[in-house]
Image (tube, rainbow over all chains, first blue to last red; front, top):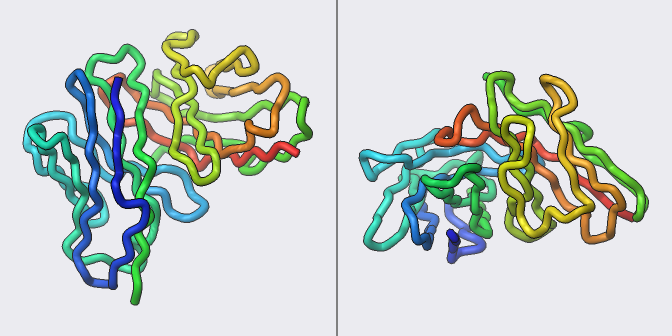
Length: 115
Length: 113
């Protein structure tokens, strides 16, 4: 079984400041890792994914995440945030070996950007 | 870019009534999913569907729930006799393959009175 922990339920940041949203996972098997973003009153949009290869993954809107197997982490970063980045961010995992690829989500981190 | 579309965006139903939530997955996708998000809680997996049958379901997906792909384009979630605790946002998702990311619709907000 897999689980995902997002330690920060809310992260307030000033505009143009850097941000890191933390994510740790646990799994007894190899996993794929994702970050999804949910803008107000919208669905879930894939921000980036780690399937294999380079541990530094670049996504949309200037976000990137680094897979750290030894620390079982997949933290999301952006060097300079904008007001439009205000949203809820979900870290998620799925087993590489599942026959159905169900996604296990973290509880989400609400990113609020202050001008 | 193709999208997963869900209808209606908001459904209000009396407790005990049946409700059907509709989804149109991306056309060349083969795997279909339903998730739900109770207000203030995390997104939870309900069921996955492939080749016209359920691949996996969670403990939430009890006998009250069923899924169907009635034609080549729609994927529906039926709740037979709704309860207050079924109030949530329900998301449909689809993927082309097992190792491909899932694309989500905007969700249907289900409110049970």
